Image (cartoon, rainbow, N blue to C red; front, top):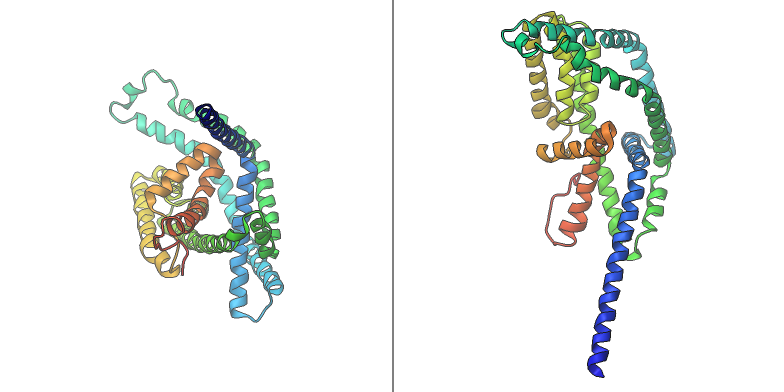
Length: 354
């Protein structure tokens, strides 16, 4: 009788464990399903957090140098941001818009001219012998996708405005939103998780500062260098290079392509000079300017960053590439504090730690 009861208890214990495992697998599957369906919303929320972190940095800067309460510092930060944007738009907006319009018209022509020049090289004509118009064949997929890109421009603008709006709401009272989020966590872990949130905000703030410095430096000096060399549309090319610098490592590679293409079509030697200029500015920015201007900056290992960006692109396209690195920064802080320090008991220099 006792053996039968022991066997029954063993079966019940196994059944209970099996049901728990099945339940956990089902729960994870449901969460992954909804995460996939709501991926765009989750990315929008994270973009809003980045906006809030950036504005909060301005607010803290105002409070550091002026005896202002947070509401007044927030108002001052908003006014300063608007003044900078309006001033830049009034000073360089019209010529930049004209150059960007010209650039969008000339890039396809430049691509066709480059293919035509390549066909004149020995052996290239034979290699392309079965293709009547290689430029058209290569460009057709791009042109087909251009229609879908243009059709999503309105959605991208709407997403940007929504991220800006939600970010402003978050920065008005970030402590309240943090408290509400921590209420979902076990009481014994709330204090530690609050420290993690604070360190994540600090790390993202430092990362954004380093990116802003890099973007401004690259954009301004690429534009000036190209203008000195006589490359047309230097302002638009500098703007593109600066904006793409927001994406570490991959962004500068993408940013140099239109620059070299336009410069090369003016003269092959000019294209080489453009590459050398870009390499010089990138080296100066990475090794001198950013380390001096943004001490204590947050920087992830290059291989890790590129892998994360490729994964983000595979999962969420362009938005995934843009947001992959800051998301990796936030995850790295959580892993360092909650796993390496709390579970393993090791001392580690957490990203963003002063």
